[in-house]
Length: 180
Image 1 (cartoon, helix red, strand yellow):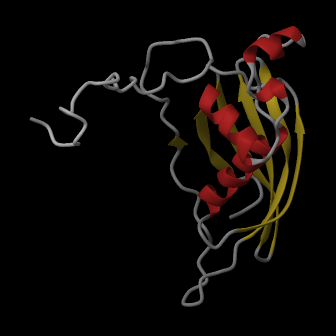
Image 2 (tube, helix red, strand yellow; image 1 turned 45 degrees about the vertical axis):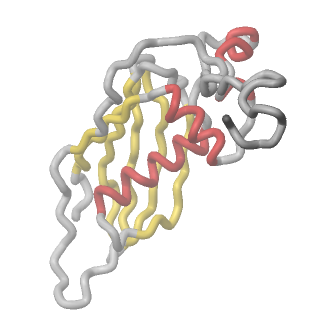
């Protein structure tokens, strides 16, 4: 790895599920991350991704690119344009510094509105014990969008069908508990 190396882009489909799951996983219960009606009442066109989910996706991008021995040392990001459902965020990165096993990567995540996230990540990549060859940058990656489904407004999921219960006096003859 050398300064100037470009990381392969990573495309991430921004789904309602990703936004809500990321907010819940990071214990961010702000309604703008899970309730479209309340988000609109607060001036947003829809729910939007929280910074902790973005931070996790940036970290995943770096560790996917540098491999299983990569260790994040510092992540410094700034949010810009929101990530709304139905958009795609493309993460890109450029190595800006290399010192021994450490590298600094300039990261940008762009969506249809502009730059969602910009920042830098300091990562350590220990050389394998058996050899000391440089880390190579893998081929481009992408996260497939989920299969199309029928759209419906957010709300409670339908429950199971009720089980019919027999009325009084139905079933057993003469109250013995044994059917005739």
